[in-house]
Length: 256
View 1: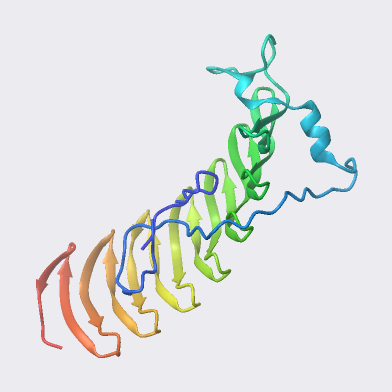
View 2 (view 1 turned 120 degrees about the horizontal axis):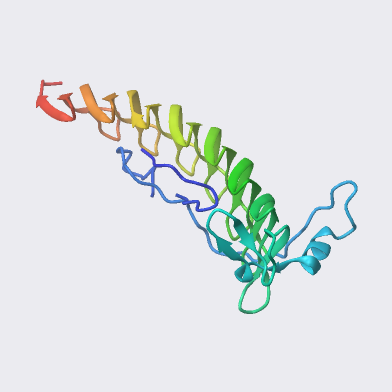
């Protein structure tokens, strides 16, 4: 099973889909070895030939902005909330963070790079809250997460990928929590688990598979706890056990 992974913190967000095929409660975004590549800023219609350089030439250092409670961010020696671009450089002088402000709040594009110049995450802010499509990449440039924010909360379909490009997880968020159908796959493309979320809890029928494609277990949850009959299987497909649960506790063990 899985927990929320905000893109940006991305938190990633503990490891699911282990080779055992059994249900788990945590996941961590996979991180492969680094393959350094330079940044490749894109030019939009109507923008200068190199909009990144123009933004950098006007940007203030992010660390120099001063936060005032209730009033937003201010540049040094300014009495009006800051409007413009803010940047952060690594100790070696490479750009690692660029964000746009308006009236003292983050409003507009936000981009983060690693030391080598590879883009790690990109999205938009609206009045200091994440808004619209956000995307995250790993150090080798492989996309590892993408979805939408609304009023600072994850909303709608989100998709995560393994470092080899295979889809890892996909499901819906509502108001920042999982809601509806969620599916997870192993890095070989084999489905590892599938089920429903409701009100931030596992709810309804869930099925788990081994990496070889054989079913490992199946049963139902109610408000996050196992409920009713659960069946477990061996990797060869044979049934290994049956247990009946009530409120997450086994109450009987009928023979297969």
